[in-house]
Length: 157
Image (tube, rainbow, N blue to C red; front, top):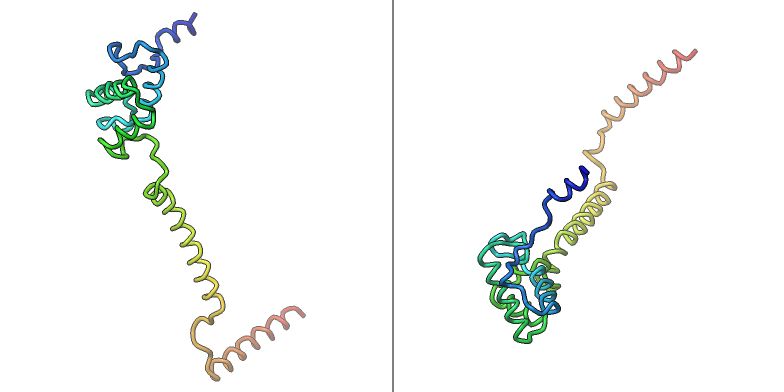
């Protein structure tokens, strides 16, 4: 009983399409809904015009339905809306040079950084750090190492 009550009271997905916008032909309405789901509401920006209650979204839904009724193909409707509002109106941008650059730049920068880091590490690994020891420093080091070796050998006995 609790489950039934929960389902009845739970919010169901509400679409913003008004009854006066719905086309009488179910096939054309299905096309209109599919196209509306691909177009961004310019007011809400993260909703499709199918989900938005904004006045501009309503105008776009009506425009899409008018174009479909006039015989335009889905691609022609999308092209018409894009020509008026720009590529930003598409929720899924088309694959073009700009979008390839937008999506590919982080990958290219990451790979370029990895190559630069690899080259830097390889070049740095072969180089000596600092200046070579002088004759006096070498003698002092040998004396220190020799004393330390003699002490460790004497403590083992």
